[in-house]
Length: 116
Image 1 (cartoon, rainbow, N blue to C red):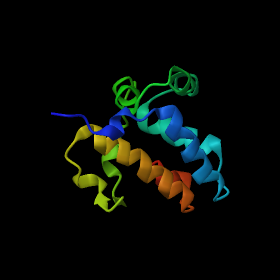
Image 2: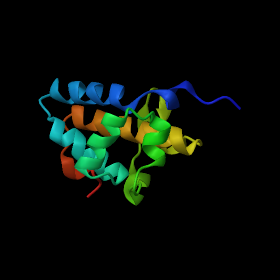
Image 3: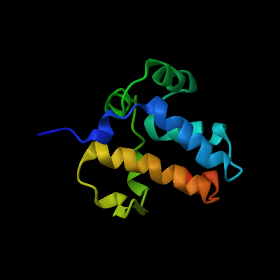
Image 4: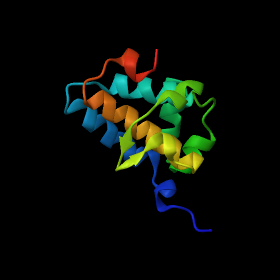
């Protein structure tokens, strides 16, 4: 079975787009980092290391220390697909991250985004 080409995208190339999306809506890089760290369990230093290593999304998520158990509370649509119905675990993690950044850009509070 051939890998989905999205899995081969470099996290370091997607990360600036997340920041730009957030900053265009008067949100911050710190908020983006907080969301990604909450979801993946990376520390700020580990997140920066992933960026510097240039890992693809598959490796980025495979090396994530602890995927947040509250991620199952993330619901909604990204790219026309309900994230809670995605069967492929890796694609679901990628879309969870997309969904959280979308929520940030739409002005949701960090408490709601982080399912606190």
